[in-house]
Length: 267
View (cartoon, rainbow, N blue to C red):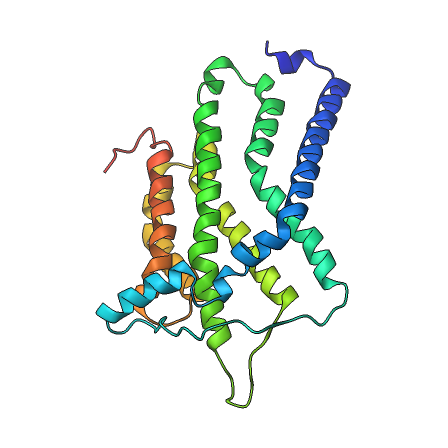
């Protein structure tokens, strides 16, 4: 009998309460640190994609000189005109961004606390991969956030800011609009990169098998191409492939990690 089965309902509730308490304390501490460094972080990290010298734009500029058909990223005058129309927005954005940055940074700790809560209910052979799972999940989440920040958000921002419905309309971006898109895309990509880990976990409890991914591979390619086109609607194949390839790599990695069907020969 496992240790979890020997605990009463109230013991479980007490342990859950302390788990949530430790997570909240960690979030609070990191949020305070984020609040302190936010002026520097905002200027040098958050607003970096709004400037022409962002590293992705310079890299794309060098590529566009040797590959025709790629959008021009060599415009050194590119700069986002940002406005604020709400008197309280800067202060509350300071607070909320500190919270979100703290949440992203403590995700490994949250995974650790969740595992510590559920692990007593598992047998020893089920715990042997815990270090691998925690490390893999953490690395994939941060990899997704990096891809979201360095690729997905800048490409989306550059296209949408440069898109005009009429020549008499001059685009400006509000602080709230910029931050909402920034946080959503970065955090969303972090979660998307957890797909292989989620697939592996579902395969461990018998919900997913390799045959599912292989049967619907063509459907997945079409869906991922559609998502890549929505994320970066520039129309050129190079930009589309820059987004599609990481997404498809996640799909293939999920196939590699899930269990094979007992009655199906691998192929």
